[in-house]
Image (cartoon, rainbow, N blue to C red):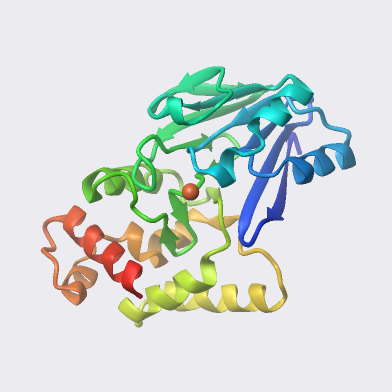
Length: 255
Ligand code: FE
C-alpha cells in the first residue's frame, strides 16, 4: 500500500480523516474539526501533518485549523468561494485545481449546495473521494446556501466518478438516510441491500464509511433525481432533474 487513510470519530456524528503518503511521509487532514483527535492519530503513527484540506466553512470542519497549522506548520487549502469565512487559508481552490499531498494527486470538484463554496477532493488513482457534507451514504447535505440546480450539478459531477470509488463523507447519517430513502423508493433492491448492511454495521457500533460510490449510484435517491419512477413518486416533472432533486430534498427535510 502506498497510501494510508485513518478515520476517526468526534462530536456526535462527525468523521475526520488523515491521508498519508507512505513514500514521502506527506500527511493531510481532510477538514480540521478536532484538534486533540487529529494529534492523537498523528502521534500513534509517527506522522507529521503537512497539509490541511478544507471542504467547507462549517465550524465542525474548521475549528482546529489554526492550532494544527501553528503546531505543524501545515499548509492550508480550501475553497476560493467563501474563503473569507475560513481563517488560516494559504491556497485557494476552485473546481479543476489539483492539490499534491506528496505523490497523492487530489482533484478539486465543485460541490456547492450545502454551502456555497463547498468543494470535494478526488484521488482518482487510488479511487478515493473526500466529499465533506456534499454527499452521504444514501443522502446528501442539507441545501443551505445554493439552489437545487447548483447542488444537483455538483452531485452529478460526483456521480461521474468511477463505480469503484470509495467515499469518505463528513458525518454518520446513514441509518437515518436509509429510513428516508426506503420511504420514497421501497422497491429498490440495491437500496434494501445497503439498508441491511447499514443496520448490521450500526448494530455492531461500526462506521458505515467508506462506502462504495457505484452502489450509492443505484441506491441513493439524491443521486437518482433523473429517475422517472422517483419523479412520479414525488409528483415532480421527470424532465427537470433539478426540480425532482428539490422535491426529494424537501421531503427529506420534513421527514
Ligand atoms: Fe456542514
